[in-house]
Image (cartoon, rainbow, N blue to C red; front, side, top):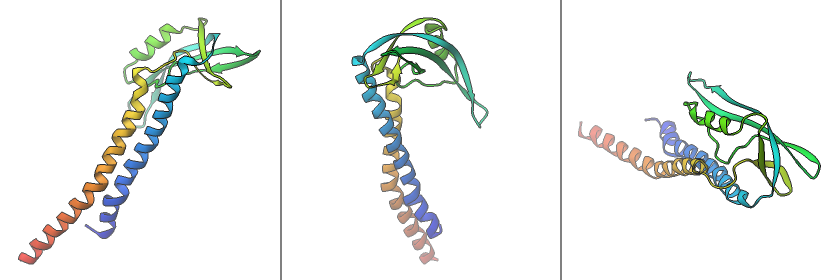
Length: 172
């Protein structure tokens, strides 16, 4: 293995996992904090203006279905729009989850909208921690842990392989 490849696989490759994992975990934990706080947010009445199951195609030929629920509401005589149902909303290759959400929030339905005090643009329909809220922090922590383990174990494994190769060459 060339010195450049050794450096890449022992230092850069694990660092990518650590940075991506830490970033995803950061945003996931921020979402968890907001989800938990959202139970204490003020609420107002709103109306669903659009509700549909959307399909997003991916480069690999598969895609995901997600619920697109748009709603309007007013705070202090100012109209706002929102599209978040809950923190941690996710797409799936199976449309049934998105359909259930769309069925709960059909176009024209009157809804209770919870909004962040001082920033009503940050809003949602279902406050609190949901199971799906834990996905991003968990995924980020997994990537961070794997990257950290690689950062420790890969240099050792590469050094061990080099020693074994040197010993094999010396025995010839």
